[in-house]
Amino acid sequence: EAGVTQFPSHSVIEKGQTVTLRCDPISGHDNLYWYRRVMGKEIKFLLHFVKESKQDESGMPNNRFLAERTGGTYSTLKVQPAELEDSGVYFCASSPQGATGYTFGSGTRLTVV
Amino acid sequence: DQQVKQNSPSLSVQEGRISILNCDYTNSMFDYFLWYKKYPAEGPTFLISISSIKDKNEDGRFTVFLNKSAKHLSLHIVPSQPGDSAVYFCAASRNAGNNRKLIWGLGTSLAVNP
Image 1 (tube, chains in turn green, brown):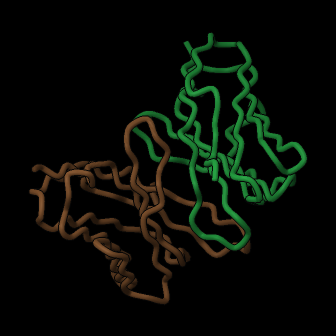
Image 2 (cartoon, rainbow over the protein chains, first blue to last red):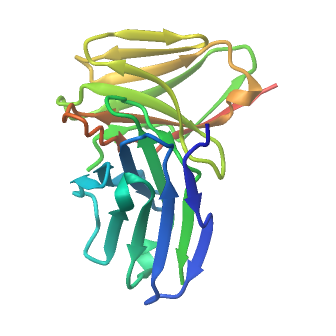
């Protein structure tokens, strides 16, 4: 069984540019989560999809962040325009319905310069 | 304001001895606690969990203890092995239907020396 796949693994962009991160969850997992870890801080929740619907987006920092999940399969997280404080590692995780533990991807390290 | 605290940034133990990682929380509404292990350049990997209705859960070399009155949990690894060297994160969640949003600690870096 393939795990949670995220790409790119690294991205370096200039302030003001746009970046799109992609996550492919484990097939059949209805739940998809995005988390972010800024250097020196704890991992923080961004949002949760159930299939294609946003269940909870209370952790999204501001309206420069837009997440979508097409047809309940893969998800994208777009940052537009990127700011310096957006730098960090963005993790995606998925789980089946009713599960309490998730499977995480390896993350995308975003650096905004 | 951190709701989940791991006050020891690092821990070093000898191979074969016991590793004890600690975690404190402030929110009494948390009803589920999890430990994740993370290697460099990888995502966190689920290790073990415990429901608030229990005080102990064991899985092989890993045991998690929960003290609700003290709002404290600990992860015991015995015997410790060099491959256990990683960053260990404590996380907590509240029952919110299907939404298991996790609140994380900062992590403890464990080094198991041969």
